[in-house]
Amino acid sequence: MSTSYQSDDFFDSGAEFTDNIEKRESLGKVFEILFLMGLLIGLFILALLVFDICQDGLARFLTPGFLTETPSRFPDEGGIRPAIMGSILLAIIVMLVAVPIGVGAALYLEEYAPKAWWTAIIEINISNLAGVPSIVYGLLGLGVFNYLLGFGPALISGALTLSLLSLPVIIVTSREAIRAVPDSLRQASYGLGVTKWQTIYHHVIPYAIPGILTGVIISVSRAVGDAACLLVVGAVSFLTFNPGLFQRFMALPIQIFSYLSRPEPGFANSSAATIIVMMLLILVLNGIAIYVRQRFSISR
Image 1 (cartoon, helix red, strand yellow):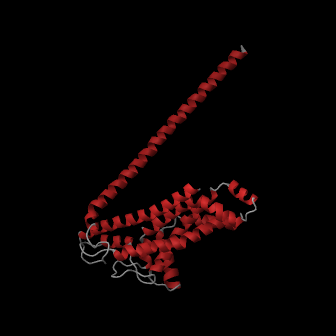
Image 2: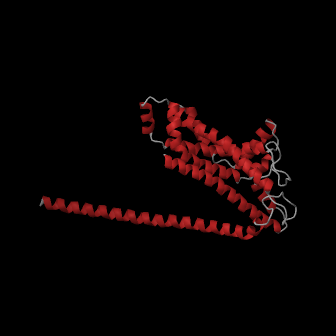
């Protein structure tokens, strides 16, 4: 009798276990459908926005001279060459300044910094800075770069301000990428008598570069499309020359804001065409970073 009771309990527990698995799989499918619907809704709205922008601005974008001439006070004339050059220079300087500093800070916090109270405070502050509104960074740049260092409303002030805006995101994502490197890789390197810096340079950084470049893509894209910082620092909406490093400058977000603030209906089409240019610029920068990330992923 005891044997039959035990077998019945075994089958009952097995059936209950099977029911639990089926319930979990059904619940998982429900959430999968909900997440897929959220993705499709977001893509649908994005597609509508892109379609509307292309419908309004494609004809102006294809106008001869729109990419090569300077702005004009007439909506159907002139171009946005100074704004394009300004945005490209801003993106290049942000990458040259923010990426080495951000990756270096992440390496120090993950590989060298001791586990102490002051490092915990630094980590909390960096995480908080990633969510600070960009206008705050603009005020900081205005006080430090424009007035304290005496750069004035020049392109270098805007670039350094955008670098400050990008640093927290680069540091946080770089730390996560470095933390994801298997510790066994470090221990194997140390076991062969390799120094700590050689281990970081030859093994940790190449392994973490795909994740680091993801943070760079996010931060640089945010910097190129930000207008609040540049408005505070002193970007202008009209120039007849390509901006220099210590000169007044234009940028694509400021040009879009300037076109939208004008009452003439033709400037709305110019604004849509400028948005197309900015999207293409961001796609090119992201494409380069994604290509480099894929190359390192394959070689790894």
